[in-house]
Image: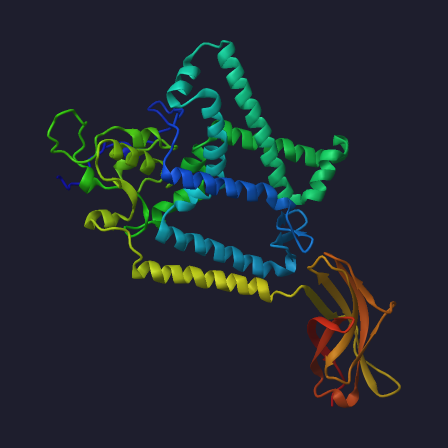
Length: 469
């Protein structure tokens, strides 16, 4: 059996399957996939879709599971509120996530795109399944598009696009709920449109955008627009696990003929792997094709053909380029163990940042332009402004105490206590008073505790000015 690498058309890297020589769009009609991996991917997609649509309505301690309110600069992740003061955590979290994606891709390839990406899940598991239901498989869809506009074509196309618009509207509202929250979304939906023109415009814009993506733009998102797809060319190497064609086993290709003694490779050149590909590529041209999303549809198609012709499965399989060259099975190498360990550390660091984050944060600053004051009974006072942010869904009545030095006292100006609303903030002014003997230097650090009843819920520190000793 030949072991030389296949020699595909010389121009395959200079063109993409969705554009012809004249630069016009080539509409893809991928064959309906099926097989063991597709079955797993289908149920994973259904679970992720259920989580996506339920996400805005799920609550943890009365707060949404996830809300990214960019206009209000308020983010809720897993029931935890993040304010602009938590920017460093969000920044570290974003950097950790990006690094996680890079390392994950280096080790495990582009599996995210084919199995988890919302674009792929919606297109392959929702919109294209509607097409298969209404218009049939790839040959029937081609014939319908070429046919004249009669009643059969009209009702099928009209029903399909009506369903596409309804789904796009639902998706738009779901993503809008992740931005503004379900309460505001319900208010926009139930109130008069004239009272929420901005929200209505957002719904129309998002609906039109999702409809355009899933009805027309489709796989072009993966092959043209997605930055992650462009990055994979520099992230993958010969040890990365990808969907790969075993050219050492499959070449040279030759059609299967009855009663013929076969001397060629196992690839019978049936083109089933090409016909089922959602981005229109030929996986036999090599694993380093940026259009490949690792959806594994070609693996299922090839395995079904291998079973029909009584040849072993795995002509197309998950493997690294070095696995193909060396003829070895994928294995958990030392490199993969180290990089997987780094992924684990990144997750632990991010989890630690979230767990150690305080629910109440206070900022205390000396009032500008104010010096210390001496009282008649021998103490020194400083005037401060305090700002407190509540990152929980629970209100707190607050009292302030000096924790260090222990001789200090605090007197609020204009009020007896501070009331910290749920998911809100409060501000106040207070005098901190220390006896002269407690001052060890002219610019001394003091610690202030914030109490709700007898519970210490936060503490902060500031500087206390006093006279020269």
